[in-house]
Length: 188
Image 1 (cartoon, helix red, strand yellow):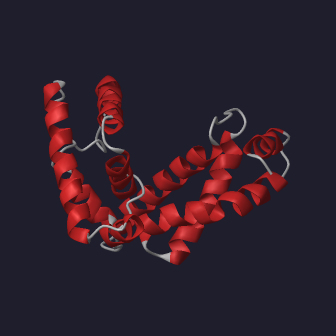
Image 2 (tube, one colour; image 1 turned 60 degrees about the vertical axis):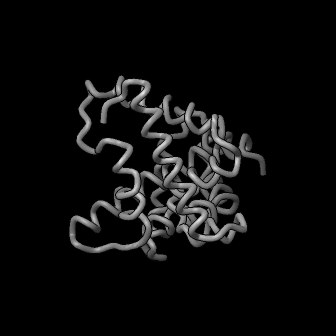
């Protein structure tokens, strides 16, 4: 079933929309949640919440790319679960390491206020431009680590690199990102 057909099922309020979405994107969403939560049960609960949030969002929203739409919902839900777990002194995985790595480049946005929105949009645009100027492999490594929160070992294995090469590439890209942000006047 195509994404457009699935979206039409949501608009028709057909419960088969959830079944079709789970069949097509269940593994993808579990992958995202597992990389953040490192717990199968929590990840499955997160993905079930993804289906509910998708049901509530479509309509009125009509996503252009259903996979990205679902991935974003899953990632945000998983990060919320992670925050709750770490507040209760639980949780493990790559999330803490990824947040620590990025803290040298990016300010804490959890405490952002509505009047900070223009700066956050500018930051997002700057990061997107930065990534567009990277070599495809470098961009993929960066996104895999900082969006999907994949372990360095998994990234190295997938691209045929050593872990030290992946770590070095990430370190250099973080330094370059920091330079880019500073040159564009984005203070952190």
